[in-house]
Image 1 (tube, one colour):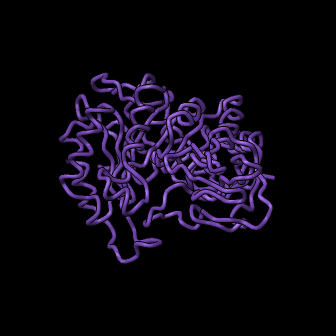
Image 2: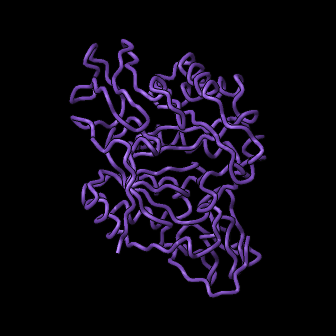
Image 3: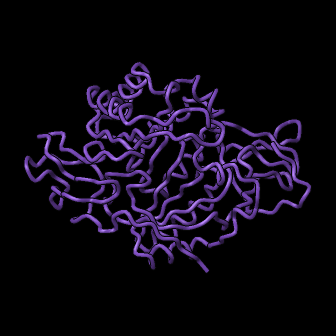
Length: 362
């Protein structure tokens, strides 16, 4: 926990309580940072000011960009459409492999040079033609007040909201947060406590609880991503345990994405994930009953496409983020056998394809 000599400013938050020793405990995530006046939590953006926890990054961003929704990744939520993506700074995990470390581990306010009110974000999404806005790059858990206000402003204009998150959150704030969200991609970073403790500085169980809560107690569309790191979380045993747990506890229709690691931040001495590892993970998932398993960060048309779990026909063909063949009717059913493909689908796919467009909000 860092102490800042500068005056801390920010907006009021709800999830905290005062301890007997005078410190203030943040109750947003299981880290439960206990702060003296002027201290910041591990996430850096939630801090103690005047015996309360404030959010110091409300209305500030590390930048705005319009992406394909498949980049989040979400393959069953309005395929082919664009999403306005933005993040702030900081993170409540400490992943040694973080591929957005310049944002998630930033302690420089220059990272937050862009600013936007919730209403401006909604207007920017509308002006860009985006059907959704995504809280991404770093974890929206730590800027939940800003994210919720932005989500409400977007809903008023018919814009959907997407949370890209590690799912490391306590129960009460989790229940409030997901009332404002339409879709989530949760990073299930591994399936062992060893990995979570050693490599992320967190714990596995709260993430599993978030997954179960989203799946069984909300209408939020859920997909899962696991970044496979050679020698750390890519064994047959772990992949078998993980995918079996997903089917047994979340159901066979929750899509799983297995993505390739590239050396970054504190894990520069690890090799890239071979495409064969992703294909093996996908096979294990499908053999355990996962209906929709995908590969990511590699060029793999078969592993990136959506196949009917009823008859095996190709439903949505993807080449990277480009949509090619589309074999769903207006209700999201297979044109060949009428099996429903679970997800959130429009009558026709979007045509954003693989474009990436920077946005300036003034």
